[in-house]
Length: 160
Image: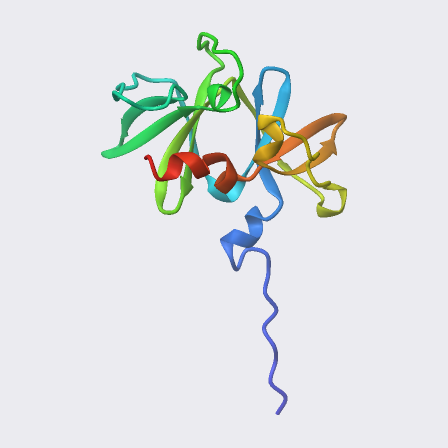
């Protein structure tokens, strides 16, 4: 009797569903993408407890359902000018190395699926933006700068 091979479906492994999917957000006029596999949730700006003697882009900590979560301002981390938070400003809570980190962004756009074949390597410049990019993709007439979360948070991970 012939043994049947089981064919994996995309829903068998939740990680497969997240492959090539990005949560897009805006800082100034640029659109960035965060790998959806790192994103836990999006929350409104809330009261942040300041912590002394930390980098200016680290705004402090919040208590999120009993967990202490460090909060970084992505705008400041990218060396952009600080601006007041408004009703579109939010915190993207991500997970990296079993640790939750909140990133304050100007606004969140949408979840997209990027075609691997359309992704290009980031430009080789000395700009702070390009140092932490994993890829660049043009989709729906806009350029999306996909962030390498490891590189973006590398200098912060040990301090947090």
